[in-house]
Length: 111
Length: 124
Image (tube, rainbow over all chains, first blue to last red; front, side):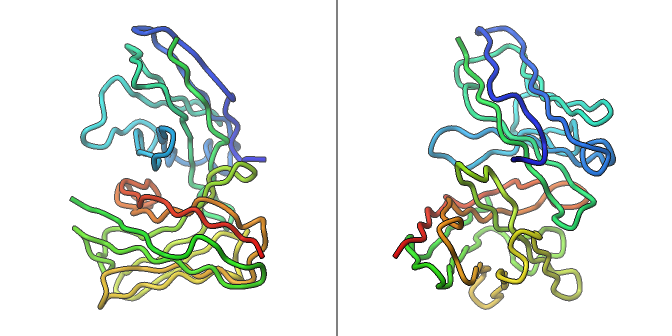
């Protein structure tokens, strides 16, 4: 059982926008602005897409954006493309002694 | 360009020690602006952060509660690498292990470069 809750799957058609939620508690997502999002294609290592809630690393498309409200963070992908089909994971800093917690992952299907 | 290259055995016997190494190019294990991490991924446990080492005038290590007491992460400045040792492994430790750099943001827990992953099976 993952510490952060994500939907198991989401889908969308090319060109559409989708959002993936990530729900935690006041000890992690809600208490700190240290939420990150990763994209993982099959057989590949995760790739950092968003850090500190809404910041994009250099080289990441501006179609990817992040936000947070209360204990829930969200990753929005606009202008959906076939290459966006992947698993997406959220993480957060946590005040528990384990430092970093992950969500269970969301499989994005581009129809 | 930072690159992380993992090495180590893919099969470990129960109760033995899992040992992996992550060689760093394009950065330094002694950098005082990043952290060096180990994570793992399995169908049963998902993605899990295991621990990290970093240098801020002296060396620091931090470990996840789930593996504390069994884990050691060591930097090796002469070989430009860092290592993972996990003692007393059980089949529950079977997973794809990754090394990663925490290089962005304030707490350095956003992992911007990853190794290629090493599948480790714990079996007799």
